[in-house]
Amino acid sequence: MLRTSSQHRPVRAAANLLLAVLMMFGVSAAITPSAQAAAQAECWTPTANGEGRGYTYWDDGWGYNLKSGPYKDGCWDVGWVPQEALIYFQCWKKNSFGHTWWYIRVAGTSTYGWTSEDNFWGDSVDENGDGQIIYYEC
Image 1 (tube, rainbow, N blue to C red):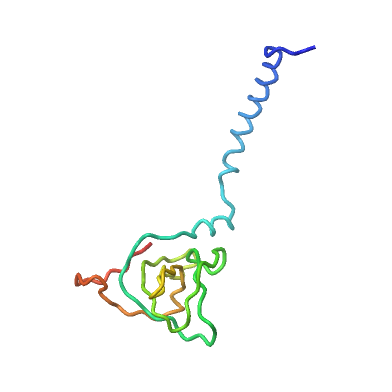
Image 2 (cartoon, rainbow, N blue to C red):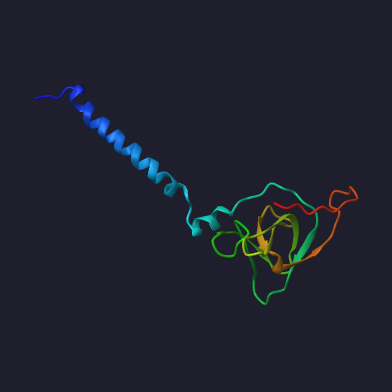
């Protein structure tokens, strides 16, 4: 025997009511990120184009990984910068641990990424010639 759509209405109404109740109590848990997810959420690509440049330190190794955000852990590698390379500053950010990171471009390339302030020394240069040196916060 075939059921008519009117026979399904009580089941659908009960299911919809149960779903509504679950959503009322489950929404806050569903949208609250975990601590691990919160660190990953701070990995992003800024759009600022700042002034200044610097050189990466000699590190007795190959160079430095560039990250997708201002964290050593939790953000993925997006590029690499050799030691003693010229870099251009785009903008800076203090992460949740209080460490300063810079979003940079490696000179002569289209390679961008985040590196810790501990990996380079800076040179204050008025890149656009307007008489001001402005370091933008990301």
